[in-house]
Amino acid sequence: MLEWTDTQTRTLINERRNRNIEYHNLGRNRNAFWNSIANRINQEHNTSFNGGHCKEKFLNLVWGYNVMCEYMAGSRRARRNRLGAQYFDEFRTHFWERPEDDFDRIRNMNSSNRRRRGIEENHTPAPSIGEVEHVLSQISPGNQRSRRTSVDSRRSRRRSASPSHNTPLTRVDDNVNADAGGTINTDTVNTNPPSHVDATSAQQPPANVEES
Image 1: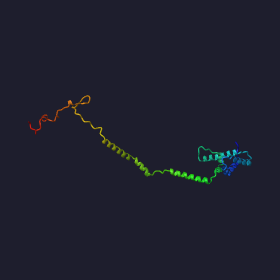
Image 2 (image 1 turned 180 degrees about the horizontal axis):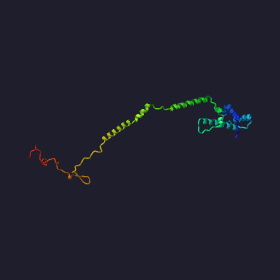
Image 3 (image 1 turned 90 degrees about the vertical axis):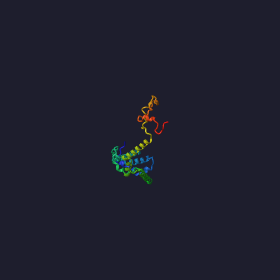
Image 4 (image 1 turned 120 degrees about the vertical axis):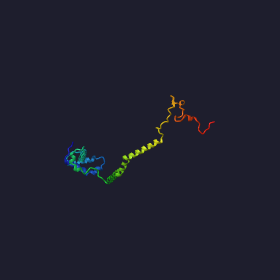
């Protein structure tokens, strides 16, 4: 692993900062860009870096800065990074990011407005005290008792309208016997008049009828 001195690292940072617009206009193939930075560092510091070395070193510097941001934010996963702390001030401006032009600013403005409208449309206001009291009154114990009384009254009306199952059967005189099959035996029915009627008077004709 190659060792980078502080002066070599700061030369790398300055070259990358000063040529940031050029970097983002190159597209995906930026090997020549990193090779040109390596040549500049080698000329100034008599070193033998190549483009891959410079690219790897700069990416490590960006990673160290991001780790320090998470560390200061209180993230439990982040650990203090030596390079990130040493060059933190140089990377605070985010100079390596693509510059924002007019198209980007308009897009960001529209995206922000769209998110704000989405939050406003999805926001449901809290119910008022009157609305809460109205809902609670619908399920209050007094209301439940009144509804239970209404149900009981409807049930009692239905019972009175239908034939009663508790109506007693007509009593058969004890003197009427039934055989084993349940058929009433009329031969044993008592034909005598009731005890309170005089037998002699029952056999006499009415007083207003003359005898022949």
